Image 1: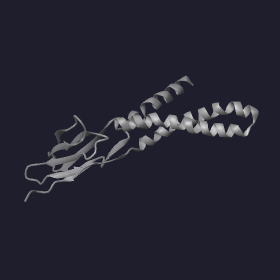
Image 2: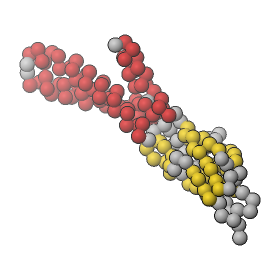
Image 3: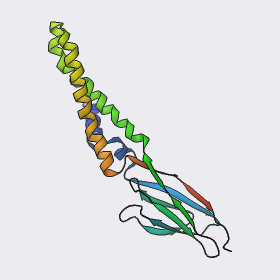
Image 4: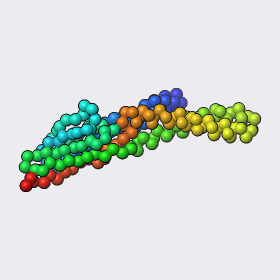
Length: 165
């Protein structure tokens, strides 16, 4: 039981998406023909740089307007703009919210249940809502701040380069 409580507290304080996949997303980049230079732009502070296909590039999950450009002598350049969207891992943050909401609702209802009054239902309902809000706030805020709340699309890039005219 103590182990479960420790896991829930850790998850509550860190945010589920932050723990699940972190602030950066790895995106495989390939080209036909291979050996194209890869340039990253607007993909997060300190993460701009270059590589050569095939490669895996690391971009910030919360980067907005991240662009991958491929260059190869004798071929036209190709530009891929990544699209930022919400990560599904973000929605796992509801778990601590439900647990905390249920726990506070039960604790608040105990005095009323013993007296079997209508106030028990109202107090439990209000306490659940307060507990749910408190349980949801921290993980969602952490994930939004770290960028783990997001995912970049496409999650892999393959480009067929066209010969330059």
